[in-house]
Amino acid sequence: MKDTQDSKNAETGTSERTTSAVAENGGGSREAGKGTRRRTAILVAAILAAVALGVGRWASGTPSLPKTFDDAGKLPAIYPDYIGTTLPPNIAPLNFRVEEEGERYLTSVYSKSGAKIVVEGQNAQFPLKKWRDLLEANIGETLVFDVYVQKDGKWLRFQSVENTIAPDRVDPYLAYRLIEPGYEFGHRISLRQRNIETFEENDFFNNRAHAVSPCVNCHSFQDRKTDRFLFHYRRLNEPGKGGTIVVEDGKARKVAAKLEEAGISCSYPAWRPTGDLVAFSANQTRQIFHLTSTQKIEVFDLMSDLTIYDAKKNELRRLTATNDVFETFPSWSPDGSALYYCSAKLEPKAAESDVKGRENELPKRIDEFRYNIMRMSFDEKTGAFGAPETVVDAAARERSASHPRISPDGKFLVWTEAASGTFPIWRPEADLFIKDLATGEERAWTEANGENSDSYHSWSSNGRWMAFSSRREDGQYTRVYFTYVDVDGRATKPFVLPQKDPTRNKRHFKSYNVPELITEPIEIDIKTLTDAAVRETVPTKNVK
Image (cartoon, rainbow, N blue to C red; front, side, top):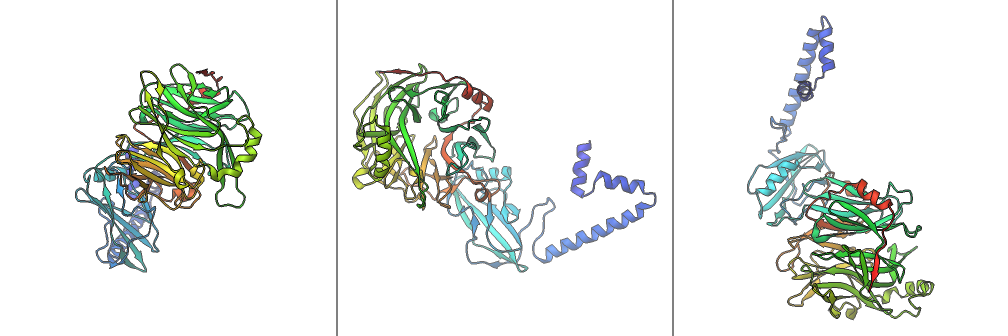
């Protein structure tokens, strides 16, 4: 009963304390009556003023649109840029900020069917349920935003912003790593999940509870599900303490996943869509920091080979062992019949065992690292791999390819391409490329690419959406973008991951790293994962 009364009081602008004061003031009822009449008069005057300006509110509290206005003759400036793109019918509201000068702001959103939504404020923030109902009722139709701005007492209406509601949904969850772009604060790394149908997000692991501030990275899910996934937990100055956290059926364990003969831990995991195998690359990685270049960091390998891990047996075997070929970034075909990966041929003068020699030599030869995309067939019955074959010969055009990802229907291959090197996220020129595996046609994915570093791409389970990271907004921070992919491999104009507060990206000084679309939430709790991380590392048996 009290809750109901509080609610009524909140609606009328009174309080229990005000009511009690009037009751206790013996002759105060007359003064209270005068105060009420004054407030009523002020309210009426405010309503009349609003009507005179051409805008008011419905009885429900929803603002109504102005009846008289001038035509602005242009599209409104809004942030983020949600103009002329294609949206999933299950995406969270595309809240935006109107970046036009004015005193008051109104925005309406509507489509062919359903009720028009009207919101007030420079930050246009749309109610979740009404937004969801509107999109679900208009799949395949055009979604229209009308923006009104009052300036110098007059209303302007801008040209309508139009977007298309796609017929295909996007996977409802996204997993990613949040990190400062230059690793300024290594103790503030988190692995997070976001419900992209709403604005709900949470850490599923972070390193803030660990005194040594370990690095956490390289999350990978089997077939976009969360009952089986893994990530790396690095404790670089404490040998034997780090490892790979493997999650299966609600339980977590920490295994070494280490190539013992080379003394190198495995990286860049890729679960086979079915079965127990995970492909890794064993990389001896180094990074250098630029003092004068706009490119902050360069990452390179002293050596790298492919390995195969059996999660059921906790066994690791080396798939490649080459001194003059660097293999990395494995990725399975959707049916598990082939393993794609990147390969660069380079003949270092220093032997593989000469770590110091390679540390001195290879930074000077960064521009010689040019990776092609390769493929090896896989026989599930025998566990044997076929001979390597070249799928994308990027080196022939003096380019370097990385992160091969095959569409769920097996039709398209998408990768990132840069001038050289193995870590395109730090290369401003890095762009997405696409190849039709049936026809052999390959091209730059120009309709999806931005001005700065597009990489770390992830297909949705239906093959109609791609999430990827990009520095296109400011060249500093990677943010998550989505693009719709039609049956012919054409992409639509990408849009950034919606935020409840549309200005958050301008205030949130973190990079979104390795966005992975998943079909369900991560249910295992952070305590279970933290407990696994601090337990002793289980050795992984190396086999031939």
